[in-house]
Length: 116
Length: 116
DNA sequence: CGGCTCGTACGATAGGCATCGTAGTACGGT
DNA sequence: ACCGTACTACGATGCCTATCGTACGAGCCG
Image (cartoon, rainbow over all chains, first blue to last red; front, side, top):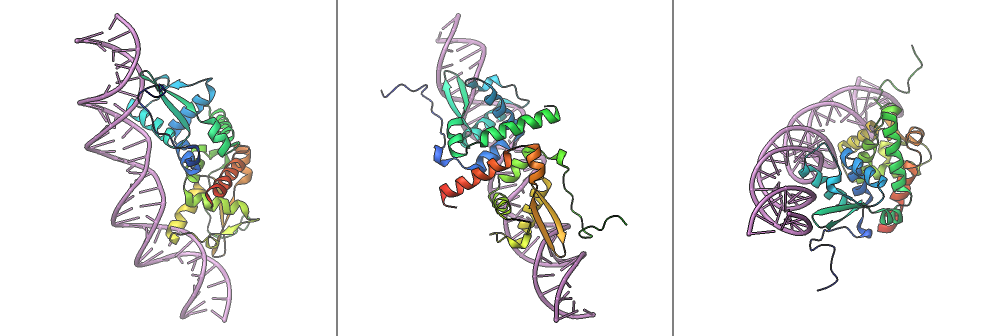
């Protein structure tokens, strides 16, 4: 066998060069997804999908994670039954320097202002 | 009479405190609107709607400008028959410092990368 | 006044999308 | 082998939206 993958199941991610700004912005324009990204940014490592306690069903949660992955905002990988999620900081910072930090800062400011 | 308005027709804008990050991101996630904003950012003053040569009908153009205005990204004011458009740099920079510049830089980088 | 340009309003249409529920697959542990 | 957990797939639904065309209103200029 080739190098043992983290799991037999692999998930399609856009290559770094295929990430489109419009898709990233669209992904982050949903409150639920922005919340996910903020939580991911505040965590040290990766987080499993089940770690999040969102006010929607699991089907919808799956949908949001897929949108984030397909837009290039997060990286997903299976680890056993869990699916681990991490921000694609490296790729995003290289493509759009300062953007992710500005977005996270903007979200934090709005949360503070509106009492989030 | 109160101070003479620029025109008898007035347009509804969100107050600075009512601008929501999600709405701004959603507004900018459309290629046509991102293009408009980039052009506005590169111009010295205000630009009329008719200045833009977009590959859509005038109805659709009106729609996009309204979305930008209602999300708080641009300010619109009538001047005779023309409708002048300007970025709300001041408000955006106060609410989300660095965000607008990061977005414009990101858009410029992508345009350069993809040959826009 | 008459016409011209700029932009709006309204209705229609087609596609996208956030959400749900149910049924199913993959993996790990007992 | 069995069960439970984690996540997915699929279909349905209702809303939002990008687009168009046509008809209209507002202001300028001759």
